[in-house]
Amino acid sequence: MGQIKIVSRKTLGKLNIAKLYLWSLYKCGKSKNLFNDVETFCLFIGHARSGHSLVGSLLDAHPNAVIAHELDVLNFIQAGCSKNQIYYLLLENSQAFAAAGRAWTGYSYQVPNQWQGRFQKLQIIGDKKGAGTTVKLRDKPELFQLLRKKTDTPIKFVHVVRNPYDNISTTAMRQGSDFDLERKIRSYFSLCDTVVNLKKQVPGSDILDLRHEELIADPKLCLSQLCHFLDLEVSNDYLDDCASIIFKTPHQSRHKIQWPLESLDLIKRKMNNYAFLEGYSFEDTDKR
Image 1 (tube, rainbow, N blue to C red):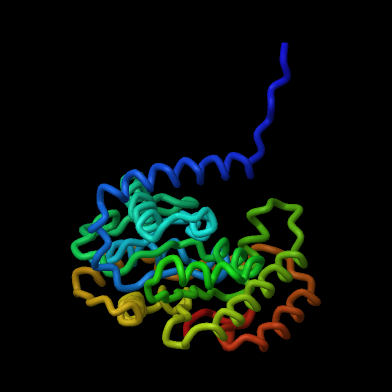
Image 2 (cartoon, rainbow, N blue to C red):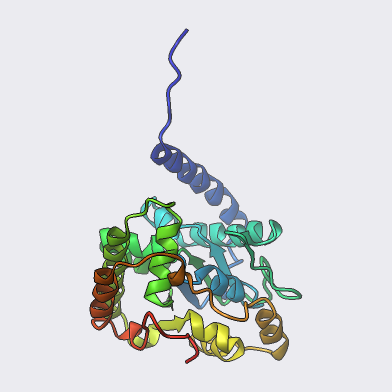
């Protein structure tokens, strides 16, 4: 009996990208005018467990926006997909996630009465893959210029920020009881450096820092600011329906682990290097 050949996850990923490349090439040829109204490409950057899924789902509910859920668009930029192929894959991803009920990591991000997976006029299209996108831009900085060239569309970045202590503790706990806290801290600030470097390459008007805690405290105000940033009109019905799915208080996971004093001090000192982390602390109540 012959041996069974084990296929690695990396190989499976490449096979999937190749399959989607061919599929999107076929499909976008049949819908070449579907993306004529796209004005802006929207990309999420930042850290995992920051609230990107919520913000991406709220934007996807807008009648003039389509935001894919973790397509990981930079993979398809590297694979050589055309702009229309990429846009088709983003739209198909949004439709599939909406059809599946938009459930993710134990939460439902389904906005009632709105446009998730559909659109009236497609002005904004993009991908919610905050941490994955940031890691790729850190490891392969040239992807940013390739993205610019490939999309040939103005790019705006949404940077969802959360209290670092909550962010780090949540990602650490997802590894189980034997997590490496120091490694998570190093990884967190490495991505902060990537965000800072990206901010140096684009106008300040093209990156929005959106605080997770402020979105929860005043969802209609924050969502209005986000839509204004993307030049999207907002209606009261849209704001009301989006606000209806947002939790009443932020989840403070920082209190669920034991913190060595040196780790608390390290984070406190390193936060001072990043303007977008100003005001956060371990003790704060997130009622700013």
